[in-house]
Amino acid sequence: MRGFAFFDRVSRAFHDYPSVPKVLVVVAVSGCGLVAYAEANPERKLASSSPVLTSAEVDNKKKKVVVLGTGWAGTSFLRNLKNPDYEVHVISPRNYFAFTPLLPSVTCGTVEARSIVEPIRNIARKKTVDVQFSEAACLKIDAVNQKIYCRSNVENNLNGQEEFVVDYDYLIVAVGANVNTFNTPGVVENCHFLKEVEDAQKIRRTVIDCFERASLPTVSVEEKKRILHFAVVGGGPTGVEFAAALHDFVNEDLVKLYPGVKKLVKITLLEAGDHILNMFDKRITAFAEEKFQRDGINVKTGSMVVKVTEKEIFTKELKNGGEVSTMPYGMALWSTGVGTRPFIKDFMSQVGQANRRVLATDEWLRVEGCDKVYAIGDCATINQRKVMEDIAAIFRKADKDNSGTLTVEEYKAVINDIFERYPQVQLYLKSKQMKNMVDLLKETPDVSKGSAELNIEDFKTALSKVDSQMKNLPATGQVAAQQGVYLAKCFNRMEDCEKNPEGPLRFRGEGRHRFRPFRYKHLGQFAPLGGEQTAAQLPGDWVSIGHSSQWLWYSVYTSKQVSWRNRALVVSDWVRRFIWGRDSSRI
Image (cartoon, rainbow, N blue to C red; front, top):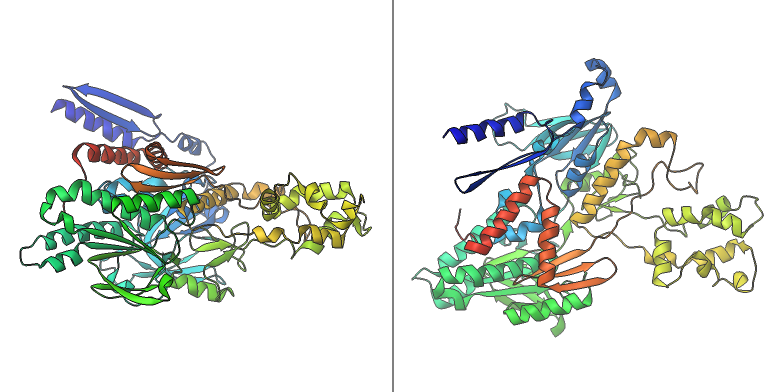
């Protein structure tokens, strides 16, 4: 007992004094290993040496930044913000960050829910920035008066103080998105979603309930078949991964516990398009469809769900002339894209974006029409400016001597700014296998004849097709995380870049933009297909499928956890599953 008391005191010391350097202590006691870990924050020492300010001086100096949401975008912004000149107020209905790529694993007991969540207050307490958190939902954004209206998410008696108003100097909207049901009747009432940790836990309970109900002696065989028919609507990464995880859960664990019904289980994947995983390389799509066919997962492409009742799904078979068919089911998961939250729709109406699907921002992630409001993650999309909209302004800016033509020197002086301001130019050159803009200009009439100067019409002709390469970024955690990191770095350098702008030329104005525009760097994507096999599509069009990619998936998803606690818990869950199998208890 003395030994455990000693370790208890050591543990408290690590937590009470986080400024102690990072230490990993491993002690062996009677064959058992005990591990103590502490994570230092040396920047806190620097704060004590700074001048002491009165509360009034601090209030006058600091700008208030309100962050809505604790998902990938909001948490990445918070973790990377280092400028102590800001006072940060985080507002979200959930007081934790969830590692959403592992939600399908939570549905089947491979990973526990507590392993993939990290309390926001735990992240905030390690910051040198002044951070406050409120567990509440945003009801309305008033961009004119720079206020947001919120309602407490805590279910207790607050004496009528459930709603409150928060002022801001800068607002970061990072609230993610709802599931898009396309107004299909019965979806909300009868289908499961997989956006939150609570959704995964609910699915896990429902799967076990289906097996328990089907095992009752009073249930007919036909009813057992219906109960044990699991339908997945949507052939994207989430739907495919859940179908694969459920198949492994059933065939590796549940059939041992429910041997009497193992031959009645059926999993169906419904996709309205021609193929599943259509955002991946065709080789991955073909492999996934073949593997699901071998595993007994029924993949129905060209099937559009038009209605869902308590026991049946109605689908329109697009390959059979639109014939409507019915399919009995026991549990259904709906995974078909993202939709806009109600208060975001209201805000979009305020700023003149009522006809858009999501918030439109510029290349610096500012909401169009609001200088002090930024939007990142699934709730927004970048409205990339077209080259042809600015072609005359670009030409005038490059034409230093106002001669009406561009010389080689004048053209070279702005080419880097064009590349930085309009990324579609480089994408177009890559698609046409051109080395640089010179190859593109050679296609114009005058340059092809040997002319050393370029007029406005030739300039327009050369760049007339580059806007065809403009694409919206996918609604993924990878995009949201990179946007959060980018925006935090902008806030860290706000004052410096006001004095010394580092962005491209302002073609429609004077000087330069403060910052370089946001650029998404695709780092690859995974599609776990079950049976310890994963498909990986990495930069450079490199595709890997099989067991080796599964180990790469393990490695990447371990390293991407936001804390060492999460890493340890996730790895321990995987080890437990390898040794004892998945947890099939209903809690």
